[in-house]
Image (cartoon, rainbow, N blue to C red; front, side, top):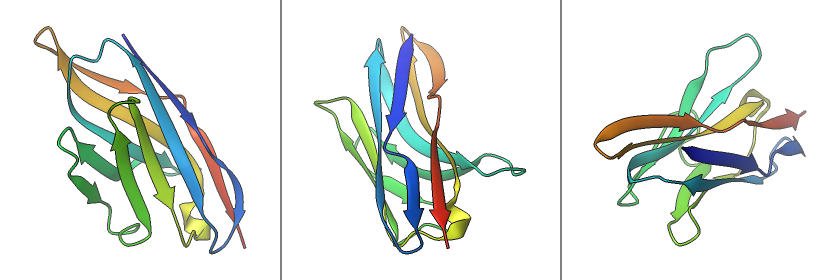
Length: 119
């Protein structure tokens, strides 16, 4: 099993910044990638950013240039630095890890952390 715990969410004004953290623990085997998703009220969950085991990031167009995803492999922690926040960034943000353990694929989610951007 893998446990993911997000933190760092909160209320921020338009243009402000937040940094989310995702602490991973458990038997992770070989990680393919880690990712941040978000889900706003009444909307489907959407991919925000991914980072491979080699540290290669990818971003959704909506956050490109404003958000930065990073990993600290020594701490088994992933981060999402969010700058220039907009009201449309308001959502519950989820941490996700995709990998393989004993040749079996897995996909785990954290419990989510609320980000609210007020105008």
